[in-house]
Length: 121
Image 1: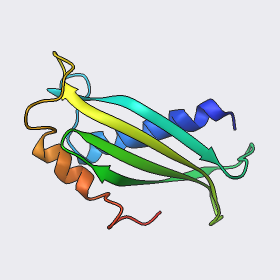
Image 2: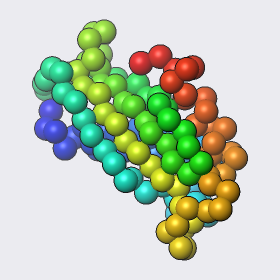
Image 3: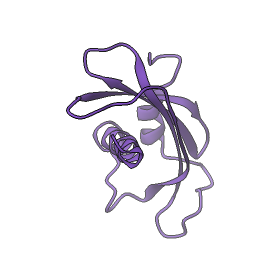
Image 4: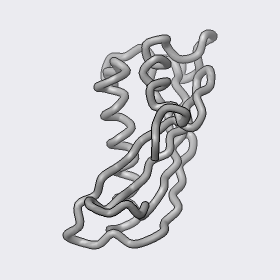
């Protein structure tokens, strides 16, 4: 699997969670998440035609930012193939600046469910 595909998967799993569990609606939400950092550590290749499973957790939840960790697994195997890190800063859609009170409470509640203390990667 090409390295760029890992980043596509990270973005997809994070945004799917935000939409389904944090009531984020990217086209109209007052706040949007800007990616300010991303990284990936590769441990073993994933090759076609393997199917992958992703595990998502929150390692750090700040006032307006969140650090996610994403594990990439080949279906049926316990060994992690890659681990990604992805940081969002939630900002006002118009000003592109963090709000005085940080991210919305609904967003924060949804993200707390993925905190590293609760989620297992």
